[in-house]
Length: 428
Image (cartoon, rainbow, N blue to C red):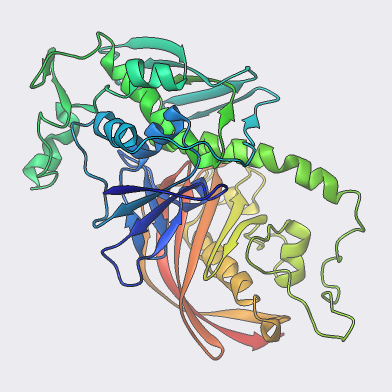
């Protein structure tokens, strides 16, 4: 792994030099692909695992712009902390840049609970993290609170190592996985014993590492954060969900500004055109589509519209959102007293989101996407009322009116279903 300087306003970008074309992409929450045991960034078929320690080091030191070059799908783990990454930055040195920083300043409290994790954020004049860490049995409960500055990062957080409970990794070891894992890059807790090659670096090293992870995951907001984070039993999924919610809060002023512009084209109306009469599609890179714009593109209506909004359009990738409410009529029979959002409707959401992306080409506007096939379908976790279904779709092949797409549905950052779908565009 190499750290390279980058111009102002670049942000943090990862580059895979081991792949053809040396693809790279921004370290932002829209690119989070998985949060199981670590944070994975994904763009199409490209994956970079366990990025939180590298990102935490940049955020902790106040580094806004850098390129991270990798010749593998994961940064070197080092000793399980950010110590080696800190040394790399210190060896290279820091260079001030002329561009002004644009931090996100928390203006109102926010709180949510996802599984065993509770996250809250409050206004504060700098970044502060207060964290309580514990396992399911309440063992090794630790508490720590500090303001994150380059000085506190160097002395209080960067050296805290990854830790895990033996029973969590026992099955992985038996299955021949995590072969690179050892006591040299993680602290293992087994019953009441702490297994490590050296004494604990801090008496409360476990909770400090949780804060290290929080700082790294929240840097996926894409700008410095000013606020007080309060976390109870945090997880990568919870950290990234907080980043998503903060990003939505950041976009609120943009939505308010749009309220003073002429109203959007009503559903089913003719789409916008240029002075020459050329039809203009609202589906373009960087666009965010509200439900009215979604309905101008899709013919589906209640109770079968499975897309409430589109939050990301980038190249061949699109991310849509479906808010699952107890008012969904399907819950009357699926199942009474135990409402579960049907997997086939998640599959339909994938197809609808993919259909929107096909409207990127003006000649496809006012066409309808017909479902043709679904392959390698997997339903991993139930979806229940109150969940927000995030539908991430990438068009992998398109020829004429037929296209193939890979879709993944997530709730709180965890994959709940995935499938490869094929569909055909026809005239309405």
